[in-house]
Length: 170
Image 1 (cartoon, one colour):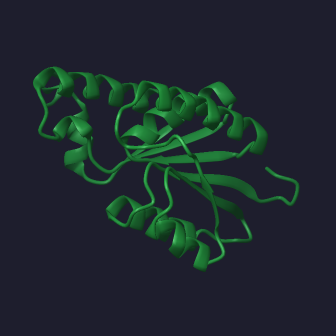
Image 2 (cartoon, one colour):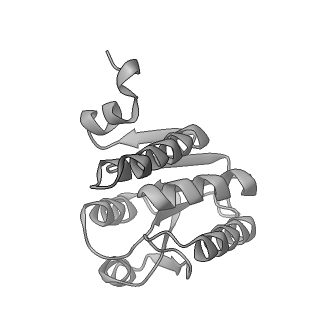
């Protein structure tokens, strides 16, 4: 807990455009009781979400190297920047949204010693139109994300079911 008794929570998402996951983050950020939570939103690039949150007086933090596309150099810098930010700010909770933010954020959170890491699975990158070998890599990464987080929220039963390989499904 921070020095005024509120839980410090970072809601994190890869992009600040406006879509389903961003609306979820917005609704959560604007609904959490301000007497219990000190809320900040972390995102990759400024957009409609950041604008709407700023209008509501909610703190936003842009992570410069966060982007949806894979880029090993930017992704490593993103991870390192994220770890530094978490160590400096010491949030009690990080709540990760989107596949990339989930994976990088879970690693950063673990390395920074965050006590509560939550991941919301809005969908899976392995469901996108990709070659099978890429789908397998994304499935492996996303199962690691779930493993690294203390709690995972699936937005639907289908999202929950899809993470299990077919041979584990009933």
